[in-house]
Length: 275
Image (cartoon, rainbow, N blue to C red; front, side):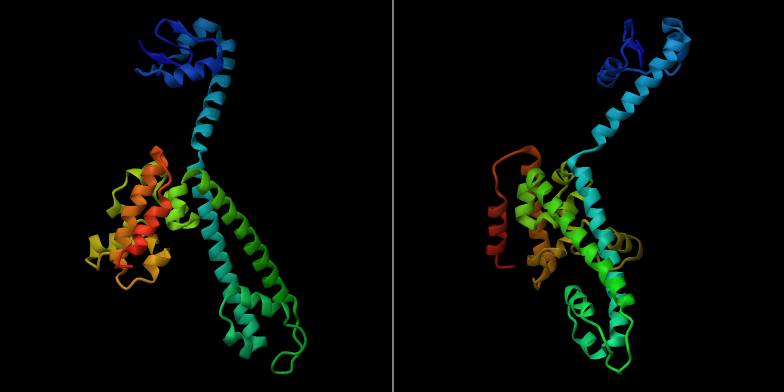
């Protein structure tokens, strides 16, 4: 028996939606030369309409299957990374322009938010006594404020999605870092199946490739360096390894279901002498 869009063996499906449902569930060899048989069964015009509706519904089904919480998390993580790149570029531009106007103030700026606050007040003569046209400053400030506002909204959205999808992972590493781990692994399912040694190096693929091809030092951590416990540790590789082991547990509990253990995992990690 061969599988076609309109039937399997002697069974015939005339309704396109029913056909998509049964075609998706059926397993067997697919008949690549089904058009002639379909035209004889339904008539050329009717079969043409059937195929159009079948493939339209089939495509919709595949798109619905592809649109998962994990894919949305990955898209939001990518948007955060892109906004960060734009903000860093605008920050450098604004700092350069503001530095021409207020060189003494510019040296004291320590953060993006501080620079935006100071730049908004940059009116009147500059430090050299020249009149300053505020339009360039306003242009950069407005762009940065809008981007920062959008970024905060996206971060809140990620936080809500992670609370529903992976509460243990969120409690252990934070919503944004947990989302990055899911994105790098491809899905929570993939992350739950990865060994801790692989989780430890997620985000360090280029460094690992250089190690394998050019013999450079092997990486000790990937995006896990963004976790406060790893960032402030003296032995970052050791702490990243311990954290990766806890991430593996949290991901498995989140994916396969179980009681909330995220806070306990974090406490166990904090109580270790390495951290």
